[in-house]
Image (cartoon, rainbow, N blue to C red):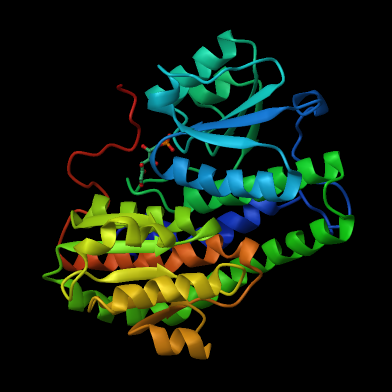
Length: 364
Ligand code: F6R
């Protein structure tokens, strides 16, 4: 069932273009009509605030979701760790929407936090690829990400599918609330439809290069990932993927925070992976990367290939096609998944079943 791939994780990374096509399928038509998510409008009427509850990789997808909802629909949104929300919930009322995000739909903390929120009379929405799960039964309304089952413990295709679900939700809210002109909504929907082919391009051209690059990190003990804005959660996700399957210590930071402490960690032994794509934080991120370089850090950029400022800044570039910044997270995460995978696979580790981890964390 691995269809020639050495691990399920690699197979699932390669399934992402197809998964994104499925997530979008029949929901956006020709991008001129409303988005068909099958959700009742009552869920969104007079909405005051949104809380998103998740753990791990789903929490990272939720951070991107917060950005999209705030930017496109103008609704104040917070993201909480389920394990924190569960015991320290914020003030909630019937005009609050609580969104639970989970790949397995069986995460104990997430479902307990949703149950606690439900008892307080909030509206509930789930985002999952497992509508038949306990989370599915708990929430009245659901967006099925259609990513299907994922076997590798490290979440990959379920993450990108959650991101796509958040784009659709944010655009749906923007449409309902009239916060974006139809033309803008259409533009982003068209951009979303182009992502699968762009990911195929990354997979076709970079797999070999990243396999080679991974050899250089056989003795590396620490990695830092940095990004800003929408790509800050992707830096967190890159670090999580690497640490959970390779057991290398890795941290993700908002690039602008490095100088407030973490930069003290840097020297020639600690590679820094910076996500720097054209957009409103591009120059700022490049200059944060240069600050790391001044501490002798080896600098790897997830960046455009032929952009002079990026070429000058980075020692190596894992290229991503240039798209509108708002769409970039779905592309920038892919080289980071491959980097984590190839570093761990080279170390001969059990990539699909990393030590101490389980696919569904039902215990507290
Ligand atoms: C990371 C990973 C975990 C899960 C987390 C939440 O690759 O898989 O961090 O994301 O345990 O799981 P779900 O999404 O099933 O609620």
